Image (cartoon, rainbow, N blue to C red; front, side, top):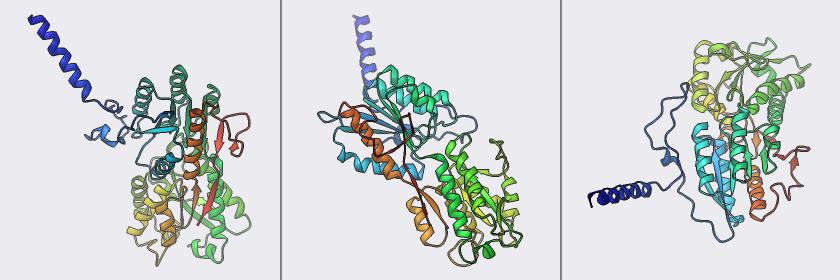
Length: 391
């Protein structure tokens, strides 16, 4: 009898623990050594409430965001959630991977175990092809289609599975458009005379780069300057890196080392970098004459540092600042005269394309059905959402 009671009590304890679960957030994963110290906040608290069971005929689609903290990706998520009613055959469940690849992998594993019908992945680690291949292996093993979006994976990853696709922008285009915006601004009216502060024929810039190994960051860093300088040929000025770019640890990166500071898409990191740069380099003496940021969050962080030093307040001295994304807050800063320009990354178009591909799966069609009107890479399931200059 005692043995029977012990077994019964143990079973009740197991059932009680299981009843306290309720969402798919993974156990806390130790942060890599280079990351900030982990907080004590429960990771599950950052998850959206679990989605209700899919309606009759609807499929479950799990969406994994590399982080909820990214302003542009937050706008894409809002667009996707707002459009979901237009796609009644899809039931979306959203997950915050908190910029941690191990967390995202656990979330994907859990979704597959729980019977997801579609994986939609904004991958955390863009530098390691084997991570994306691992995710595809999970999808293939469960016979579940997968859509990668925004943060690009290689052609080899997409080609490895006939139910895989990527939706995003064409990475070089953002850099080219940003360079065009910079050149057009400088060539307008007397701007060369105004912003070549020391009149030496050099527009000295700070470059705020996204993460190491990210193709979007690489092309924006490289092509913004190359494109602008090509357009400025014969104007009497060229863009050159400011000595302020050397105020932070530099990394070699395919021939463009020492031309940038790593802001990692972050307004806070950009603010710190630019504040440090301004403490040793004076824009009024021509030490810093331009700020180029790989994204709007970094651009806005730079602007806050400039404003603390009396620049870009809407009146008085100004250092032109350019970003990428055309977030709502960036567009407000442009209208206020605090920011100079940005490049629109069409989050709404991206969100709709993701849902359209998901709807194909819900309707029993191939992932890439009904996509003839999209810009698609020849011979591979990659859809490109076009950019546009704003400012």
